[in-house]
Length: 382
Length: 220
Image (cartoon, rainbow over all chains, first blue to last red):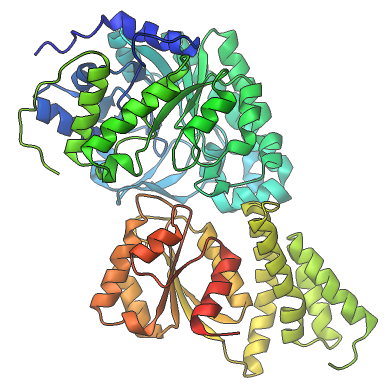
C-alpha cells in the first residue's frame, strides 16, 4: 500500500511551521492521537506493520518524543516501550503487571485498574523532609535512548515536539499529595515555593535541555490546573506559584530556539491571558466541553496556535461517523482560517471509541489531504 | 435563648471567622473555651461552624473561594467536630439521617467527596465513607449493612463517570433502589446525566449536596 502519497513528508513539518506563523496552508495540518491499544486496532485493521506506520499512514504532522504518559513517565525498570508517535514512548510493561510501582520521585502508583493512581507520596507526612529529599538524576544514562531513536526516524518528516508532562503543579502533588499540597499553598507557601523551585531547576530545565539537544522543533508541556467546572485553585495562586516558573521555562525554550506548547485541561480561561503574556505558542487540548473553540479563536487566535478541538468526550465515543466527519470539516474551516490551527482530537482517543468513528476520522483527515482511503482488511468491530 | 456573656458571643463570632479563614488551631482552642464557659455543643455547631461552612460554600459557588480555601475551612471544622461529636452523642441527639458516600470504581479523587462528608456531618448526618475506588458490590453491601437514607457517588473523570450508572443498576438489581435516595456529583457530572441514569439528584458542590439531601429526604 502506498501510504505516503499525500505530499512529501517535509511538507508536513512545513505545514505546522506555517500554521504557527499564522499562515494558511493547502490544508490544515492534523494529527491523530490515541492510546497504544487504539493504534494497534488501526494497525490490524489496515494491515500495517506498527504504530509508526499507522501514524505515517494517517499522515500525522506531529511526533512527540519524551513521554506522554503523565502517570509514570520515568520508570527505572522499563522493559517494554511502545512507541506511539503521537504521544511518544509509553511504558506498557508495568500496566501489564498491574503492580504497585514506585516512580523515580518516590510516588507510588497503583496500576491494577485502567487509570494508574497514586497511593503514597514521599513527602506526605512531613514537609520538613524536603531538605533531605533527593530529586532523581535527569542525566541518568539511557534516559532518552528511545526518544532519540524516535526523533531520528522522524527528523524532517514531521514537526518534532520534546515533551515533559507533570511540569510543575502535578509533579509537586505527586511528591506531597494533592490535598496536602493545596492546603500548603495557603498555609505553607514557603514550602511550596521551595518544592517548585527544586522541580524547576533540578528536573524540568535539565530535562528540557537534554531533549532540545536531541533536536526538536518545539517543546510540549503538560500540567493540569483546571477541571470541567473551573480552576482547581485561584488565578491569584496560579500567578503566585505557577506563572513565574512557567515563564522561566517558556523563555528558556525560546532562547534555545524552540516553540512552546502546553497541554492543560479544564476551564482555565481566567489565566489564559497570562499564558499568552508569557509567550505560549501552541495550546492543547482546546477541549470543547471546557471552552468554546470559536470564542478562544476570536480572543487569542492571532497570537496562539490551537492544537486539538475535536471532541473526544462526546463526538468520538458517542457520535455517528457522519458527526465525526462534520466536526472535522467544521473545525478545519473555522479554526483553520488565517492559520493558527492544528487539528486533532482534544485528548487521546480511548478504548471507548467505536472503530467506525476512528475510521471516519482517518478517512476525513486523509480526504483533507486529497486522498482516498482504502477499506480496511479486517472486519470492523464496535 | 438564655443570656450569653459577651465573651460567649465573641467566641461564636471568632469561630465563624476563623473557620471561614481555615485556621484550624484557633478553631480548636475557641471550641474548647466556648464549652468551658458554658456554650453547648449544639450552639457552637449551629450558630458558628455550620453558618461559617455555608458561607464557605457560598463563596465557592461565587468563585471567590477555590478548593484550597474549602479544604482548610473543612479541616478547621473537622478539628472542632472531633471535640463536639462525642458530646453531641451524649446528649442523645440523633443524626438527622444516614449517608453512604464513595468515589466510584476506577477513580481515586477524593477531595470533593471529603468536603461533602464534612458538610454533611456538620449538618447533622451520620456519614459512612466507603473511600475511593469503590466497586458496585461495596455500595450494595453498605446499603444492606447501614440502611442509609441516601447514597452519594463521586466521579471526577469522564472515563469513570459511567460507573455511576453501573452502581445504580447494581443497587436496583439487589432490590434496594427504593429504600435510598441516590445523589451523584463530580467535575464531569451534570443534571442531565443524573436524570439520564435515574439518580435522584445531582449536586455540583459540597453545600449543594447538603441542601439537596435535605430536600430529597424532606428535612427542613
